[in-house]
Length: 176
Image 1: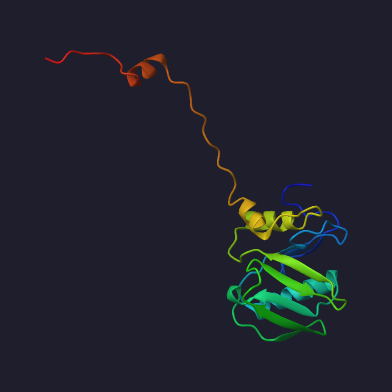
Image 2: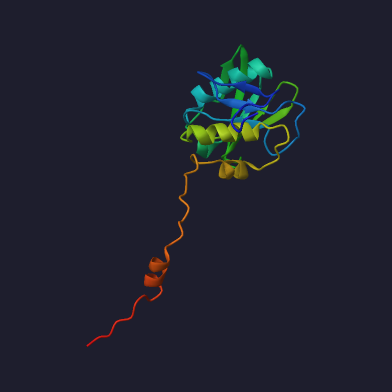
């Protein structure tokens, strides 16, 4: 499996829908159960896409909790796939996560990758957050992802003896 390839058994929803990846249900319980990479801060559009994707892989959700400062104003409820989902905004919830609850009360926490994240970085975070053994914090997941392809750093070449001599004081001359 490559560094940006999905994990086997990981529920993924991409393309025109939500860009999300969730740990397999048998995965290790950590700070997050996966990640979601919205395209904007519009909660109606983005929450609907996420809830639709999760309904297809994990079943319907009844509640979605989010940080109020991280999103534009949202309605109190959404109807997704024939199910009503209660949206609850909090000032105290981590800005980098959303919390979802299914009808049986099972809670799932997803890391929210900022919408303006580069493709390389976003895919790396999606992959890492959904690894079955991931126990990293949201902060660590976002901080550890690569920003860009590593640059090739040229290796210094050995200076010639004459060049070293010139930089070490070089040739002495007399001032008249």
